[in-house]
Length: 252
Image (cartoon, rainbow, N blue to C red; front, top):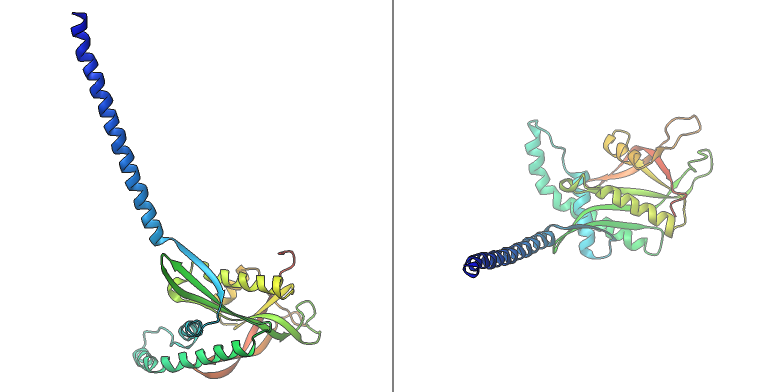
């Protein structure tokens, strides 16, 4: 009787063991599928930001596209003239891009071997790559931020900087500025960098101030200004700009 009573118990234990084995196998398979799916999705969605120097013809085309969109396009308005402006812009845009393309390509060629950099921010997502920002860095004549009465001398200056409107808020502008600062400090051996910003460009002023830039003060203690030439649709214009600066000592 004892042997016969133990047989069903043994069968139940065997069945339970087989059930646990099958459950373990299913769990392992499900986990493998889940991890594989996560890896697949990650491979398609992982983004990387690359800051590099423009050197190819297509690079200058991308720079021209960004600059044209940021500075030459008509402002977004709801008045009756906005539709006309947009239609005219469709006609004028190719010309503006061509002018900007030629200007930046020519500047880069002239400044080769000198203290000048035309930087690109390239966003990589999976196998796709797109240029989403640019910054121009060079030497501009300026007063010593510590002594505005001193004689003018060449100082590292961030020129044009812009980011594609669809990718703003991702830290691309900050990455471009930080790359400029690294070049100034590590390669050019300067301890400060300057930037000119139009007084009514509050977004740009707030952006640079958030990165540690401060207004240069003139001999009377006022915010220093200087006239700078800007190009709008190929037409040069003289406009006043605030001078901002940032000390880079201690970063290396």
